[in-house]
Structure formats: C-alpha cells, structure tokens
Image (cartoon, rainbow, N blue to C red):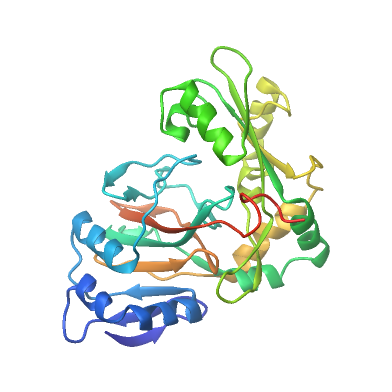
Length: 323
C-alpha cells in the first residue's frame, strides 16, 4: 500500500501497490496502518477490490481481533452479516450530527470502519471532526463540568415512539433487560405495562489510551431535547412533560444544561469538520477516540455499512465519570 494524499484535517488515503486484495494488503502492513491511524485519526483505503459485505467482514478480521455487537442502541440499524451493520437508517434528507460512536455508553468501540457499497448520487458524505480541535474550541469551564459530573442520559421507551426497548436491548425479555442494565450500571424502571424508563451516568470526557490526550467524549448534544426541531420538542413536551421525553440529557448530578452550552458543542463540531465524497469500494478506518463522524443529506441510493472494533472501558470504573 502507498500513501497518495492526506485530506487536510481528515484521513490519510492509502492505495494498492502489489495487491488489490485489501485484507491481504492490511495483514502485511498492519503495524504501519496502526501508526497512521494514531497519527491522522482516520485511514481511507481507496482503489481496492471491495465489492460485497463479505469483503468487508474479511477486512474487519484483518484490521482487528475483536468486533462488537451493537447493543443498547440509540438509532435504527439492521444487521447485514457477521459483525456488519447498516449505518443509521434515518431519512435521506436528514443530517446526522457529528458524534463519537457509543459515547453515551460506559464502554465503546476504540475503532470503527465504514464500507461504501453504493455511493449517493449527491451528498451523503461521512464528515469527520478531530476531537482535539473540538475540545480546544470549548470553554474550559464547560470541559471541567463535563469531567467532574459526566452526562446522565434519560430515556423513555413507549410503543410507536422512538426505538422500542426490544430493539435497543436486542431482547424480547424483561428479564434480559434487567440483566443487561445490572451489568452495565443502568437504572431501569417500568412505569406501567408498556413504558420503560432508563437512566445512566457516563463520562463527559475521555483520555485517549495511546496518546493520553483529553477529549470531549459524550453525546449530550444529541440526546438533549434542544437537538430536536422546536415544534417536535414542544409537541413531545406537551404529551409527556419535560421529565418524560423519549430521550434527554443532563449533567451527571442531574443539573440541567444551561441555555447555549450544547449549542457551543455543536458549533465546535461543525467548525472542525472535514468531508470527502465517497467512492464505491472505499473503506474508512476511524479512531473513535480521535475522530467524530456524521452523515450529510443525500439523493439517490446510498449504502454505507459499519463494523465496530475493540471495546474500550476507561480504567478504574465501569465507564462512569471519573472523580
């Protein structure tokens, strides 16, 4: 493999040399690839013979010894094959805000990869944002509050509103939900026969295990009601009250976010983002603790698949905020 260019603020691009078989090429250059991933935060493999989900499975095995299931879900996805999922299945006209995968959980994938099976006609990029730049753009007081208190995520599961609990927890059993919540430090309560409430406090920042750099690492800006269109937020609040929204976020001690705090987080992500157009067959390997990702609206068919790798839990706790 050879470097062809580096997208400023984004991935380094690797192209084939002696073989177009990406899993084979990666197996022979894994250490160099890991070095590039640490240096740049993302590596884009372009021009290899990658045409099917099964090819992507082989890439995943070559890239990492461990792939992760997608449990305690926050967005609709479908399993395609062994360890491979669709990316979030939101309508094509919607943008998906920049975020780090599973940053609302106490354990998350250290790496993830995307495979462009079918590129959109227009749009559909997967923008990236360097978390170091995002963190540097945030107020030091906000970062201290994130680090001190963490973020508490409150979710209510009701029929026909947001994701059903059976999808989120990948089980039809209430006992299975209780076991998962007990194992992962999630408070759960059945408010009635059909309504489940969960709450969990997770980290607000994280330290990269290889570089030691502190970065903002949570999804408060996605879960908080301010992420909803105003008319939707008003309608849901009218139906369920401010304490019963399908999803919301506070500081870990229950303190609400001040007006504008999460707007500055969204602005910091937006200011750091870079994007490139997908080409069919592209594979993007991402350091989940260095780069956030999102999705831009698109037209035409688009199929981008994902796989999650290498579970990371911060030392000293089951993923809750470090004090």
